Image 1 (cartoon, helix red, strand yellow):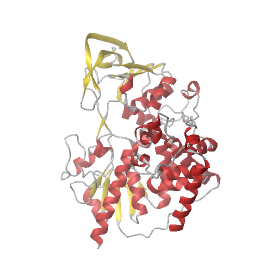
Image 2 (tube, one colour; image 1 turned 45 degrees about the vertical axis):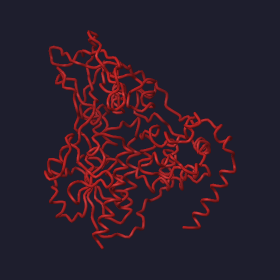
Image 3 (cartoon, rainbow, N blue to C red; image 1 turned 90 degrees about the vertical axis):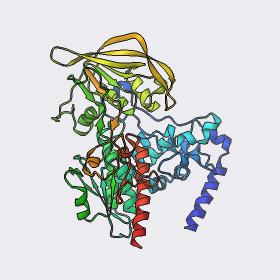
Image 4 (cartoon, one colour; image 1 turned 30 degrees about the vertical axis):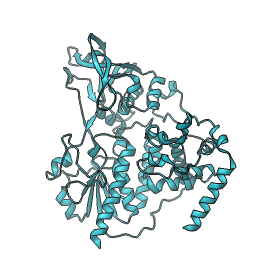
Length: 491
């Protein structure tokens, strides 16, 4: 180990001296290749095409390898960011991928969908220089994709790590990012891990919630295959709380349970006409298309289509929905959001992609009523024009109605994306579990342990809706805490 550390320190020093800081900071940030908007709106191909190796090496060269790398502090799963980037700089791409997988179960996913601009990249020292930060997300994606493509090209068989088993069994409820991250850490610690998924495919929100033009299924499947190769067992079509009860999990011999059942219960606004035909949640809309193939040749799952589609909301799910509507053939697709464009919670990149594709943005507008035709199908919505008032508790300026400024907008499909609530199945099935007023499982924030001694929880069932990487951070924290507790009990 000391030899490895010495070698690592030596080549990093060589890299530092190869170029001066001034030369490194003069390199412009890499621009990721993208599909042309006119082409991509008629396909489900991934929009961002990834960096070439030459681009990735040059971008990695920008990293100054700070003595106190704040980028690591900004990463919820604590990736050794300078280490993996410097491996890319010296051409050791597979080593870079190995560094990523030491702390992240899903690097190819995170490199695509995580909000790096609010996390690791926001801490990059380049921001203090008024320069664009190192493209950490692009580099993470590049290294993970390089490894996957190398495995495929060379027909490499994935094999489990030589980890000594400790004989203890762990159940994971839900196969989304929190569950997969937890499972990845626990299998490395020597536990037997089984992940139970209620749906017919593994991946949770990564499969049903995020469209393939942003996160291809082959990428998700490759990450899951990696976990399978490590020894994680997956069980589909099994609803914990219905198919198998909490008591039955004990009878099956599980020593610990991690609940990562997500937040799949959609919210609506409670305004007149919301039950008309042609008004649905973003959850239902995206699940029908992403997971069940609605709209694809040969698939039987129905989904409503519209010529004038309105998506209510301003988050990433709203962007996914409105861009999906374009790909489903809508002539006009619009975002209706009650605040300004600058205050939208969606990633800047996603908003930019939507604008490129022709999405209309109706900002400072709030639906107040839907109108239907004689068949009960939505035909229009009334929107209240808003203006920004004083900041609310989150620091954002609160939208205030402009008196008398009400408009009627023609629409024939409305997709509501104003948030989700936690999946109530587990809370309802285990009455002893402490639940918050919002329906989330109450946990210790450091250990992710619930009010029941052997149940830990993380992700949206605890947070009520958050990012992939925050859910993964919960999984890692829970794995460390559960392992510590179980090892203590063994002594």
